[in-house]
Image 1: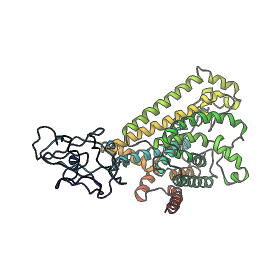
Image 2: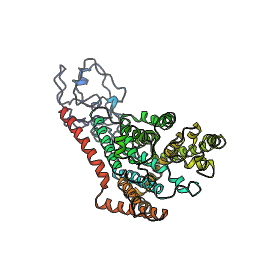
Image 3: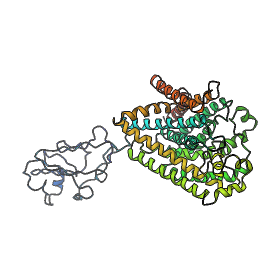
Image 4: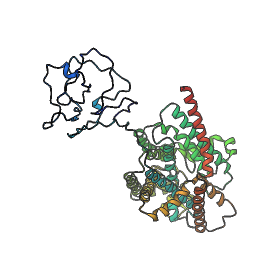
Amino acid sequence: MTRPQPPGSHRRGADRPAPPRPPVPAPVPVPGAPRRTGTHRAPEGRQDAAATRTASRPRRPSGPPGIAPGRTVTVPAPRTAGPPRAPSAPARTPHTAAAPPDTTETTTVLRATTRATPTPDPAPPAAPEPAPPRERASRLLGVDATRGVALLGIIAVHALVEATDDGTPTPSYLVFGGRSAALFAVLAGVSFAFMTGRARVRTGPDLRAAAAMLATRAGVLMVLALALSWTDPSIAALILPYYAIAFLLAIPLVALPTRVLAPLAVLLGLGIPVGSHLVRPFLPVPDLGNPSVLDLVTDPGALLSELTLTGAYPAVVWLAYMAVGIVVGRLPLSDRRTAAALLAGGVVAATAATGLSMWLLGPGGGYAAIAAVSPPEILDSAPTIADAVTGYPDGVTPTSTWWWLATVAPHSGTPLDVVQTTGSALAVLGAVLLLASVTARGAGPLLGHLLRPLAAAGSMTLTLYVGSILFMNSPLDDLGPWEGYLWQVAVAVGIGLAWRRAVGRGPLETVVSAPARAVRDRLRGRARDRVA
């Protein structure tokens, strides 16, 4: 890598005289012979100062054999070894802006020509270059479209029926239950990575500014969640207060290098459910309601316990999803190989977790062990023990037996459930990124028509999510499950397209991001003032 050179300090080419050096005690060179550096040899027929100082040493030829005298040939010195300097040559005066030594530069052997070939100016430092506009557009389209998929999935969980009359889980719940919320959480981590420059945040002013920004976002989300506390949790349990706590817990993660954060994400996903299983018997029983200001005042300990460990979306479990999202957000998501790796790795992880769960609960004896210790209300909730185990968890599993940790039931929060839902989230993100890369290259108008409405809705998921909650808690929602769901999808996509074209950022997205950015910029300004 070549350091940048200040004005006037470019390496000279074969046809440019060297910059003047500080006077040093040396023999006077032959008149008319320009000084030359150690990386250029004097043309045949001339003699420079170095040759004068080493007159006793036979002069080396100036170029490859067969070159006629009087013609200039530029032959750079080898990178690691070159002709030794004369003992009498004075040391070069150090200069803070000088180019790095030849051992750090790339040496190119020039072919001999009949004309002098100037040496190119040093290249700028190899800093990470921003992605080209087309690649950046592909990445943003893919991430926003994936958010749109998550939004439609979580609306399906709220609007559609979770189980039939006899307690059998419906196919829509088996597909969208748990996976949509996990996809939201992974994408929240990706957004964390984008907001922090897709790199580790160094300790000091940068970390303080990033922490203040994320904490402000968490505070605004909590205020918004408390304002929606009147909504019916049987229709939709609000995910916003849990996200607010998870945002606070995730602040230290942005300061970790990726090589530390990646294995930590695995440990969080596997270890936290086990720790939760151990401590939950000693915690208050959650009421699974949407938290209110009254809960915050009358029993803050119970509320904190529910939001972090025992509720519908326990923040400590969802911290693993955000850690995975931060790692993914630091990857080159515009690269199709990255997208393909996310797709393949996600499918393998989800399939492996599902297969292991089926073996443990079936041939391994898990279902029989759970049935032996379960109360009648669990056994009577579905026609089979398998259906009961699939449909019973609501954020966490019972602690009556360790066999509950072998399930991958939606919203169970077990180690295998975290692995399965993380894998499905990565697979969906990878698949949509691949489709977006095809669209960005201009080969796929049909894909573009499919992804852009999803991306428009995904660019304002908070606004549309809150709108869906308000609609389903209003007298306007007198439609059937599928009819109401399809209407919500159509309205969400239509509003997303219209708002994005007319305004840009969603209204609630602005409410959350504007104060967070203001706090961040204020802290950065204070840090610059202290340095100045």
